[in-house]
Length: 67
Image (cartoon, rainbow, N blue to C red; front, side, top):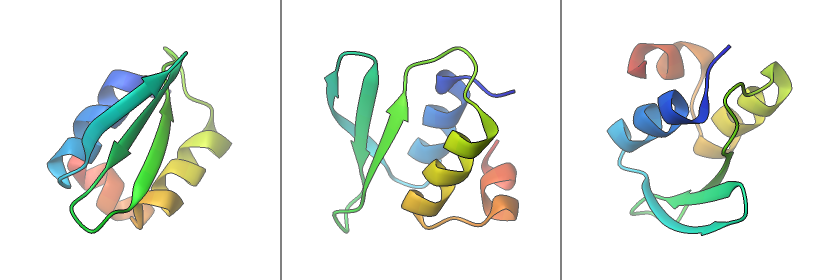
């Protein structure tokens, strides 16, 4: 399982930057205006991780390469 730190680190490699946080959710945005919400959990569930990849416009292989 991946934690929020690893997911956030991978997304920053694709030029996503944190723009705000509300409670335990961090919102990141890239230069083209695409938003992704990352829950600040030590273990992110598989379905949530899939949704994050889809929101970011990344395939599973692309995302794994960023880790």
